[in-house]
Image 1 (cartoon, rainbow, N blue to C red):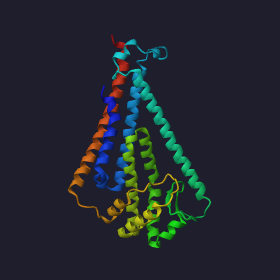
Image 2 (spheres, one colour):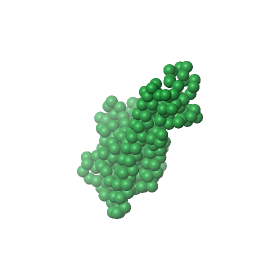
Image 3 (cartoon, rainbow, N blue to C red):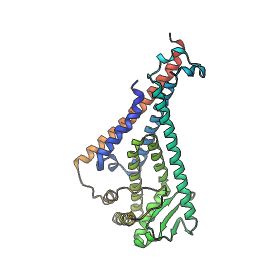
Length: 312
């Protein structure tokens, strides 16, 4: 049955399209907030469909193993009703992939938890002013530290490189990350990529859109898009050559694209709209066929098991 393989192949096609689309991808045509939600939900949905397809392959393969009859009461004729003719190798491969996914999910969760603990252990050593902690460090860095309540961590090196008006932009940017829980979107995208590596392309786009979301919030708060663009560019460039704390933080997107978006300096290109619409079409198509494939394979396997006792 071909349907069960569709959820495994769809993310590969989507990754290729996102790479080829380059700067003309659909996130450039959508509001950052909407793009973050759409792309995060899409990556998670594709990951779930992948897991379902592998589970179907694993179960279908196990049901064809004669030794299973001594463990589970399976009618002898079940193999004729299976939606896919899965040989033991295929079943073992599906099981290995599922174990690999579980290990990847666990590593991502543990890394985020560990990095967060280390960041908090460092932050509590210094006084907090409202929701801001200034770390007397020569490194040029600033990030949002999620928690209850969260904090904005900014180093002395960063403060020395920014003017007071630019500091307002930076603080507004980081507070936006805290207010909207942007770390959750990034974690979800990373977990999806752990289930199916080609989904990393969507995760990278989510990171960029999260930055754009915070950029827009900062520009709205200070009321000056040019100032916001200048501050974001300066902060990114001054911290580019420094070692940033390995926090589960918002990864900086391509700074020139972010600045151009704030200043609305993106070139008018007739291909931009076409490529964005084509990318959106491919995304919707991949979601639809993946969901349909996973549902069809699951339904067929269930019907096969239920129908097996009456088979002749």
